[in-house]
Image (cartoon, rainbow, N blue to C red; front, side, top):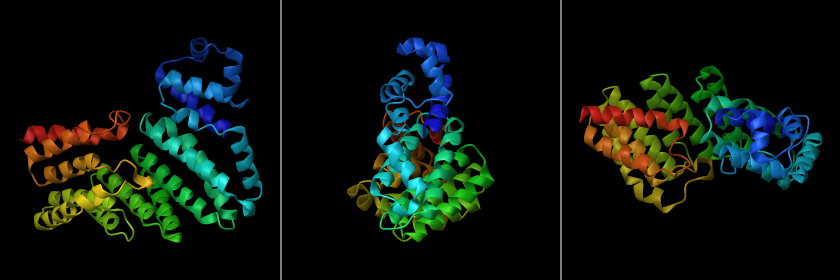
Length: 323
């Protein structure tokens, strides 16, 4: 774990404009100690992890990627003997995944990918030998970690590897019957198809996500709208309108439930962005601009400048130009 923290911390410092010496001076730490940590020769203390996090403005996400000594020992014991996997190990790994997800909202994907994929490989390796009542819990973490890796690679346009991981994530989700995880992995395949400019793939994968058994209403709502946008682009206007109508019928059920942990961003405000994309595809430019503007304005402060918002800002420009 310390190796991965070192990779992320080093990249975060570079992105924030700090040299190693300047960072040590700003935090009042011994440069030699910081050098050992950033070069993976020494584990960071909790205080140093927090200080680095504060220096780069990561709002706790960077510090959370560094396991405590107790959790590090627990994970190491489970890795050495997977058949004795315990819930504490699963909880610790889930916490690391949550931290990486938060880093994705703050750092460029390329800065996070190496460490995130290293952690993903550790989790999936542990899963192969895991036995007992905690295995299903670990499988859920593994599926989410794999789909997160696919998402990161999709953002970075490493398309073939992204598709491979997203397919693996669906298989892991199906193994434990988790519809929300399966739907989210299919959603990311739709996102990648949109990045590739393949409207047929966008319609296919978002439709598959929307009709995945066990998907959360907020997932289905957003997926239907994004499938509708693609169908409209393909000239299938009547089918697009039917999907929009179905999505509108899910607005109340989606708002009545908290978003799933695997798609924590799917608030009613976020789905205004998806409604904007559907309206844009249908040529309703004024409505599209209103929805996308409201969706962007409704994002939490830590998400407003996330790298993935670029496509919504671009869509807003097209909507404003078409009014």
